[in-house]
Image (cartoon, rainbow, N blue to C red):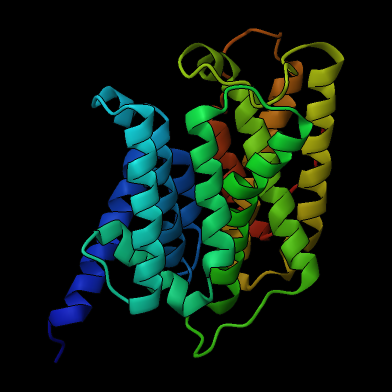
Length: 289
């Protein structure tokens, strides 16, 4: 006879449900890929992305819409980072999303070496409006590559009694996949980033040869990631392949889209086809231009 959870087990489940609700409210594409994860890694990946989403919203508009000054945004972000690191240490937070993330971090081996660079990049958004090549790379590492590394820790360690570090080739693949995702989003969001937020992440690479160079870098990163995706645990490969193929399709459409044509999207029918293919093969497609 099964019994409803109580105490900490109930709190853990409620925190996990809160993280899942955050993800469902913000990203249909991510929710689609998440459904292809096995039951072992799925809740942990949601927990990671829920914290990332909340932190991102502090600097991407909602906090300012609520009347917060840049100094107040920094204060909120600093407090969120402190609470996250403390929750990883003690195993509890009164913030449900932080608690869910900390539960995953403790089980899967996510520490301050990944958390701190993420929050550093989020703070960059408060006071940096234009990036050069060096600041772009530092920002992308903290905002995207470490998130890929957090997910890799989940893929390899969820359900393990003792987390272990990832092999170097998987680390490189996770970083490059995260970088590709971020650069695709930079190109898709050029108008919004410049107009609403006043930011230029790509050092003016909105047109011409510089735009092509960014797309070439994206495709190289996607190809490098694709080479190691088959080495991931079987209950992760379908979801990661789907995400890879979705962003490869976005890259292809960005190449074919006229400059200034607006935000490039993948139709729902194409998303579904990509997901079905990945579910059937558990392997990413070859990157095509």
